Length: 309
Ligand code: NCD
Image 1: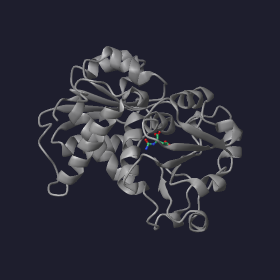
Image 2: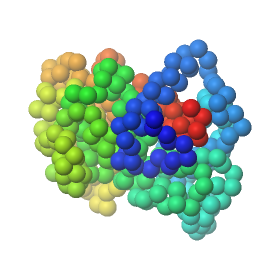
Image 3: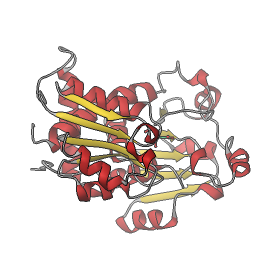
Image 4: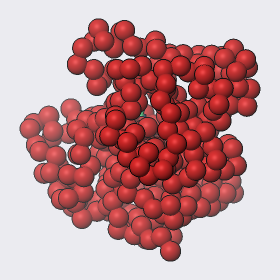
């Protein structure tokens, strides 16, 4: 059986399908349990450190909520400026320090590879909550959980990924998880923001059917799920380039009703302008349910790596 005890969660590509299935099953158990009780005492007495060197609303609060609902405690910081990073401390030293306080570490950092670097010096398991434009594996798992909840299955689903596929870490992690299921992936992005060619090539070698296009409407016609993403402003060296690209794709209620009335719409959030607010009241809009699913999924990850389930 898949055993995640003591493991770091760093990259969407690290999982076997068995491990993913186990995480999904545990998340589903927690969802059901929380219908009857606000919290459990599985992690009573344990401390999670939430180290956020980069802005976050959902990921940090979701990890914190997950730990609280498991009965554990949380310490941490929510900006590099409020930590000793501002005084010039290295990431490795900050992590070695936090390792003396906490049993498990969730972190977000602007540098690609930072979570891996942290895991190399920490005894506590490290959960990557986003390393620059690199990976965001816990998001990928909660996205998968949401597709399963919304559509009843993942196998055979056509998933349209749209937006900043070059810089978006949620999609970089997501495709590594979807590749275990017989999904077709349709990637919609402006030429400048396409999914990195090495990732696409690797997926194809793995046997995944991948289609790349700049046409969102044509993609929607064949999609079951649309995974919409924000253009990642903070990754642009040239602000003018961001201004040119920021309105590239906008999903409206009219498009869903005209092209694909049973489309499931996911978005990791935050939304800027890429999904109009008139979509929110449609049952197609799964993005706030997706936020809630993040708590169950992160509860599962914490409990699994701590060997509590
Ligand atoms: C994403 C992120 O931080 O990568 N947000 C999230 O974790 N839910 C997506 C984004 O910022 O666009």
